[in-house]
Length: 153
Image 1: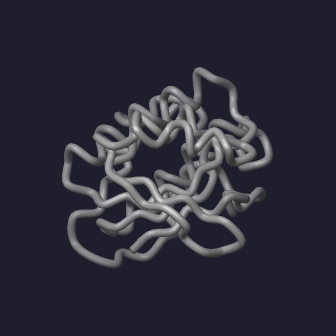
Image 2: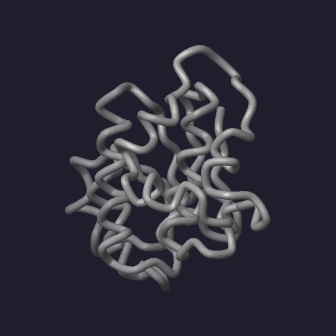
């Protein structure tokens, strides 16, 4: 299991590539640095840049890339679109679709409904820390009225 925290957890004094090399291998099948650079070309261009010099979007890509190096097949992604430019959010959505097609299981905690809705197979609505509603992607349209009653959706 790999966790990508909301605050990203990038080591500012290390280069992007050094950050990529930090995570331990949890299981075989972790992506190589070459695979990561193919998925995130921006990181290849910024391989020698310190973490503090990366944009918010590049930092988020790096945070996701680090967990992909570990071999984890269950990914917990916490608010990965927060504060990012629309073009970066679009790239992250593309990455999630690619990972899903490769058999990764992804638990996405996200307030950006427009980002998350097309990616989700299942939806869980939480209120005060408790799941109050759950439904499948094919039931989304029928639940839109209820979802619009919640702030932030």
